[in-house]
Length: 258
Image 1: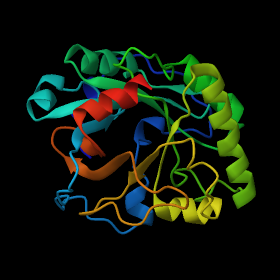
Image 2: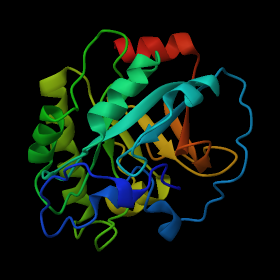
Image 3: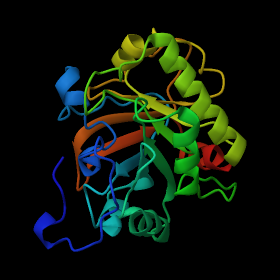
């Protein structure tokens, strides 16, 4: 996914980082997939019977985003990376989040999880306090937990399957307690099977955002009967990551409203 800004010309102040989180600007939703899973980000997704709504996800990697052009191309919602671990805050978050909103897009925030860095509760608190909140204003999408392969080490962050399930449960409980919404879980079926043992513990409360760069979403993780969101490519127009909401625009607005 190509950056839309010149890094050499970027003079924004950067937040302090923990030594073990050395490149958070390179960690965006789906950034680890190519190394671990077979994908075809250039393939066109097949049309489904139900209506679908186009969306994007962005992080500091993109810098300034041309929201007007995205809107003209049919994009109606956006998710913005807010935080990573319990130390990193996206310096572009406010500009990206408000930029999408000003163009009439429904927007939300996501957290890039590093479960080996700190507890699920601590990272959830950090996320909600730094952009990951929710309001029933009809314009704010529920918060998202980004769970994917570790960009700094062992794919499952050195945790057993039971430990990973417990970490996710703690994160979800804290976000729900603080915002009133259970977080959406972004993941791949491959990671979920490998790192949680294909747990079905979250399908009743946590909507699924499936990542698969292919013509169809494919098999779902255990428990979920449908995906709510699908990240279908990392090579889409302007920003790279493009997604589809599994429903109509009216359904998307209802999803935001809660």
